[in-house]
Length: 131
Length: 499
Figure (tube, one colour):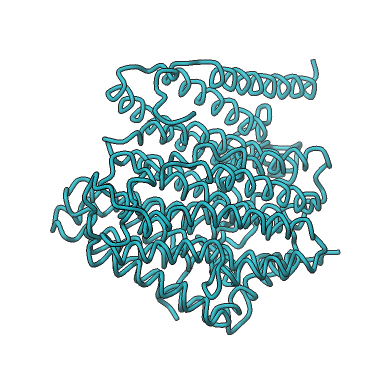
């Protein structure tokens, strides 16, 4: 199998997987009644988006862009850099993961507060405000 | 001058927010003094930078870590973004003065409160100043993450419920924004807003529209656009009184800024203006209609605030110079008047169990100053002359007349009548209904009264002499609408000219 074909199959499976994760997460947020399950679904959507982002910059057999070994090309020494993955999406996804963690932590703290107040995590039973 | 720099807007509040617990260890009073000093410095910063921008007529571009944009991250302090940053810092100072004694009760709570206020400030000003779309996302998340705990601040109320609702909606907003950014990055390979704006034509049409809709959706949630604003009334009404003012004058400003930047600068889709106009009309009509039916004062104020956001979207959606100037005027008014209404309104319902409007009947005699200032704010927001709200509405009406949008004029006038009905119901109750004596009013502390008087003075002064600040609105509108100028200033070398 040629390398290009592999690359294409890989990227399609990345996109498919991230799309599936996003859809599963959205389904969970819309249908689940338990507050913690809703938060879990949100993190699943987050992972889907992060996977999509990181797969954008991925190259097969690419190295990290920090350091690239020299490749000897023929008799004359030509310095060619090895193929590198795009570092920007990785840096951004790191940030996005941290933000997602923050949101989840605040959400869980709110769930604890809600549970103490209402003694339930069922969203249908917490209806002091109009939803 | 050397001391003033746009980066301090973001760096200092963040630094203070993280150091505040340490300050608290040194001396307990420091946690309340230091934020005030910070806000004063931010205002000084604004004055210095703004005079520089006005005298040179060019935005100030700050590069971070020495990398020139489009590779590095930059902050853009223009007549438009600087103006909003200025409003946010001044309102921050007023919120601080207002809450100075409000939070005297407990050390832990006031520490938390001021840390969160600092974070909201850093985030909102960062959103307004940044020239990098991913940074914009990060700052929006800082705003959202610090708003959730502010909504749930009081344990006794249903704050946690409102906050959870806000969190779910906010998480969807951030996912939509992130997906939009992914699409843009995958096509253009850049995150710099000026470069995106320059090269947006290279994107395939379908992907461009998808990215636009995703970003519009995400920013629309933050800008409290109907039908994505279900979280807002609960958040406003469950949060502590001054936080309502924080939402109206800081986070909502950041939200509307993002959506304006999206439509005006980032994308070149003409239908974006019409979409903004249409969503604005829907937001205005629905919110004011719902406000009419509210029994609780703060919910009514919240829906009225959403209506104002709709009015703002209409003004920017018309997209003529006059309309954008009117939009800047409404933006300024919304910050000032809504804050006055939230400040005075939260004292009116201070001891009321249900915060109902009928609980505050007859308060004109009990709390003469607060009731008077609330009345003044109500008159100003519905647009009675000679208060500042009148000029904003008049300039919007004239701008829509220039664009031949006669139906829009009729609509805005009808909605204004609705506004008058529900505000006058409250003012009428304050002065002409009998006090039923269910609870004793809480007298506002001197600092709260001072803040309300300052805001009222601003409303009256701007109403009598609108020319005092009108030029700033015009400059801001110029800076916003001149897209080529923005790109050229951020990317002097890459600029090839826009057709």
